Length: 83
Picture 1 (cartoon, rainbow, N blue to C red):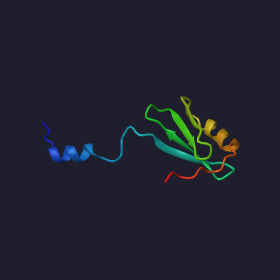
Picture 2: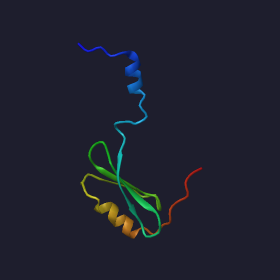
Picture 3: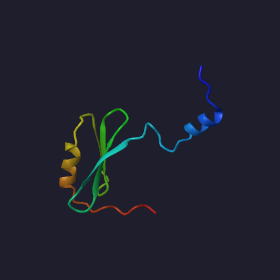
Picture 4: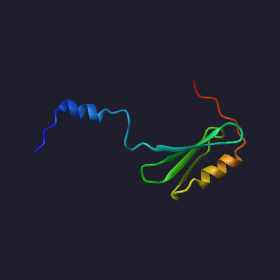
C-alpha cells in the first residue's frame, strides 16, 4: 500500500498545466507577418489558428499540409492583441 499526503495531492491537482490542453507543435509564418499556429490536440488530431485572419482549422489527418497551404495564401496582417 502507498500512502500519499493530502498536501502532495493538493499541490499536484492545482498544477497550472492541464494534461488535456493542446500542444503547440509548429508555427508557420504568412507572407504578411502573421503566423499559423499548429496544435496537436488530446485526441491526436491537429488544429491550427491564424493570427492574421483568425481562421481556425481542424483535421483528423496527421499532416501540416492544411496549415502550410493557409500560411501560403493568407493575405491578412496580424491582428492587434486584445488589451
